[in-house]
Image (cartoon, rainbow, N blue to C red; front, side, top):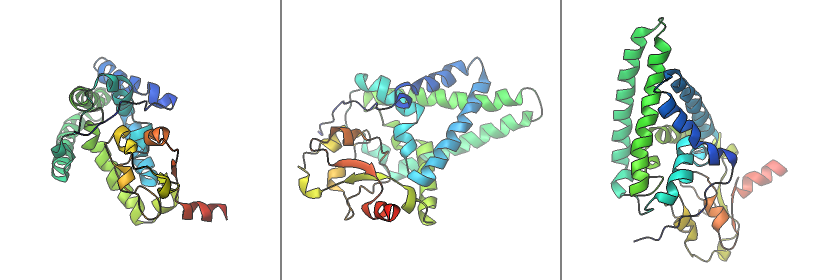
Length: 247
């Protein structure tokens, strides 16, 4: 069994206190459903950031991520994520079912369009969604590892799709920062970057020829950067991009 370490993943105030937003919407929204409408801003934010910088939102801004890393990590078993939860088949199937359910509920809510109740009914969709994510994601976090939900999170899937679009039209090549190793020769192959990775990725085995970690599921949280024993990791543009930018 792989050895996964519980180490600090909180490096900014947003990551430290963002979980409060999840709790506010999930529980406060039961009494004031309009709180759920604030999730629309979350969705816009994550889609914009993913277009330019991949899954950066997941590792640095996501309120659920803050809950998992800040509150639940100390209580988690922190064991290996079940392989089937990371499979493309499961991820696609879960996304399709999630979207069908969301559209169905949205259509019901829009029947109240133009009435005083519409905003409450529409907001309540996001409230219950946040509550479900908190309960299911929280349970998985305790039984397996904090970021288990993130493997098949529908918002994560949307970020991957939008990132692909940004990459296809040549935007991300200029804007995306990735995990970068300054000198492969200095790497000890100790595997600590894999031991502390919230997504249980293995950067030290997958650096490309341009010394970057190209895995789309890297959330750029910098946990591996902070824990590298030789200090050769960073979250940056590629060397070539930095050179063009500084020229």
